Length: 436
Image (cartoon, rainbow, N blue to C red; front, side, top):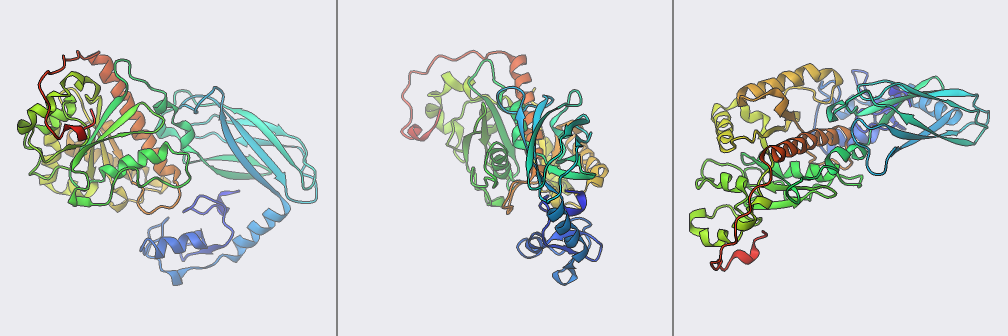
């Protein structure tokens, strides 16, 4: 389908298009859900004020889409890797295309093309004539433009056939091989510590990682408890195994200025604390309990860290100073910085033309945090979305890809830690709830 027939909200072909005062067209149900269920009053494309009464049926576009559907063709596609397993970044893959002739007249011989973009090379293949009401299946190899990274994956790619450009949504799930196939050499899993100020959306970010790795069409917003904001839904140190990977994510209690008074963060980083540790407990008072896990702390030691902050907090010097202060806990382990809720910033983050504004925002965050801009990732978590979003999935893939790369480098630089002999003292009565 040409771009004119694609709803900018759903990324799918429209069947009942409506148009606003600025000339933007949307699928009726999608824009009504945007305005009513989400409580918004702006255009999702141009950000101009928009109310329900501003929408009118786009009859011209509906007639054009109807004629095309009746008289032309339907195109469906799927991927498959050239080697067994998920498609990895920079790896060529096979694109399978099914073309159905919806009209009575035959479609003449033609060429189908995959148009070049930031990730793909231009590819093409001849398409034989297709008789009326018949279909044909084609498979052709897709080449990748050299060494490509997660940020190069387009939200959509374009096929050209029958004189029309057809927008296709990229399935990010198929490109997670760069994350899923990495394995640590000295421990069972990579340990990734997620920390930050309370209410930053740490648990929501973990749910977003789980959604990326899921085969479900709906985002998984229940993988980790979320939604408490500054009420601190996470008060224990909790370990989550990301499905299909060799990664354990450790979720922590958000900083509040009153907690973490007992050098707790350093103990977590070193692997001295177990999963289910009550983070309000003072470590000095629980030494006997912790002695039980001293011999296996190398299995829990952090290989990488994610510092989660919220964009609006950077306007507060107190919060900015608090963020900078956390870096002192991680000698030799520079965290990846994830800036959540950028949809609340004054930028149209979905607009392809907003790249300059987003890059400026990234540099501002890097300057406040005194880090390299390449360590900063802008992010929007799944909150009320009912379907997976390629753009949100790409954000998750970019973050995880960088985190795993850093974890692998950290392990290579520090080698295999020496295991400590087990402590022979009796442990406390509450250690049975811990997961070492």
